Length: 317
Image 1 (cartoon, helix red, strand yellow):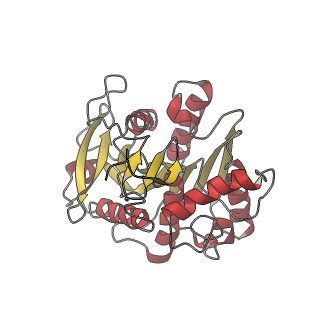
Image 2: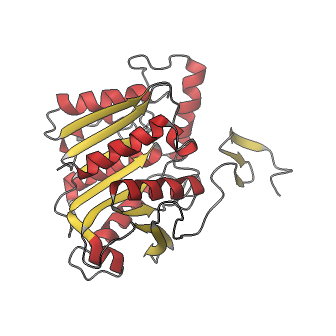
C-alpha cells in the first residue's frame, strides 16, 4: 500500500506525514548537496564515515588558506529539524556551516544522525555521542581523518546546533560532564541557537493556548514515544537535577523574538546561573525574527549579527 491510498496517522505538515501503513513522507529537508569547494567562502568540505556499523557520516569543513600545521578551534555541529527532518547535507545546513567556518576560521564537523520516527530518541543522542567519540579519537594525531589530525586544537572544542540540534548539543555537554571522553579534556563552550526546549506548564510570556501548545507537545511525543511527557529532562532542562554539571566552560544561547521557544532559552540561561553552574552564560536575542530565521535568510542584518556573535564567542579567550 502506498501513501496515495493509505490513511494518514499523523500530519505534521509542512514537515512530514506518517501513514497508517508505516510510510513516512518527508515534506521538508529532503534535498541534499554534495561536499564542495564553496565558491563564495572558499571553504572546502568532504564527507567521512564516523560509524561503519550504522553507515553514518559527518561533513567536514576546512577554511581557506589553512597552513599544513595550523591548529584551529573545532566546532561539532548538530542540525535541527525536530529530530525528524533535515540532514547535515541539506542545502541550508551546508551553506550555514560554510558561513560559520569562514567567519570564525574554525574546523567544523557537521554530524548526520538517524531521525525519528524510524529511529526514535534516544538514537539521535547516541549517534551524536558516537560522532563526538570519533572526533576525540584524533586528539593524539593518529585518527583516521587527516584534517582533524593536522588542524584541530583539541583544547578548543565547541558543540553547537540549532533547534533540535541545540537540544542535542546541550545533552552531549551534560553527558560529557558525567562521563568525559578519552582525547578531549574539556569542552570550551556550547552554542545553542533557538534551542528546542519545552515543558508542560507555560513560563513567562510563553503561548498559553491549549490547542497551540498541543501541536508543539505532539512533536516531542512523536520523536520520543517512550518519554514520560514534556517535563522529561531531555526536553525540559529546567527540571533536570543534573543541569549544574554541564560539562563546558561557557554557553551562548541565541533566541528569536517571535519564536514560540524564546522563553525557554531565556529561562535556561537564568536557571544555569541559579543552579550554581560556574561557567559563563551569554544571551543574545534577534528582535522580530522567527525560529531559525538565519537559515532562511542568511544575509539579513540579524543573521549576519548572529554569525559574528558566534565567531567572537568561539575566538574570545
